[in-house]
Length: 167
Image (cartoon, rainbow, N blue to C red; front, side, top):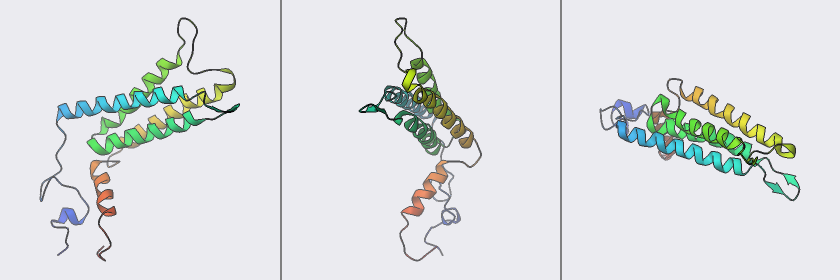
C-alpha cells in the first residue's frame, strides 16, 4: 500500500479530505478575490507606467515592458491556480488594461505619463507586449486543465515529498 492513502492521493489529485472532492470557493470569497486581483493588476499598471521614463544616466532602460509581461503572466496564473475557476484569469488583466489605457491619455493641460519622442518605443512596447501577454495568458488559462488548483497543489506536493525512494 502506498503511503499516499486513497487512490486519488497516489495520483497526485488534491481532494478536500480523504475521499472527498476539492471544495469550490464561496461566491462572496470569489468576488473578493476577483476584486483583489483586479486591484493588483491596476497597481502593477501604475507602477509600470511610472517606470517608462527610467534612465541610468542618459540611457533609457526598458524595464516597464519586461515588468508588464511578467505581471500579466504571473497574476492571472496565480489567480487561476488559487481559485480554480476559468474566469479568474480575467480580472488582473482587465485591471491592468483599463488602468494602463486611462493613464496613456493626456490631461487637459497636455501632460502625459507615456511619453513619445525618445521613449516612444518603451511606451508602445509596454502597451503592446503587456496586452499581448495578458491576452495569451487568459487564453491559456481558459483551456481545460490549465493552471488549476489541483495542478498547483500537486506541484507543491511533489516538491515537498522528500526523497524516500518511492515514486
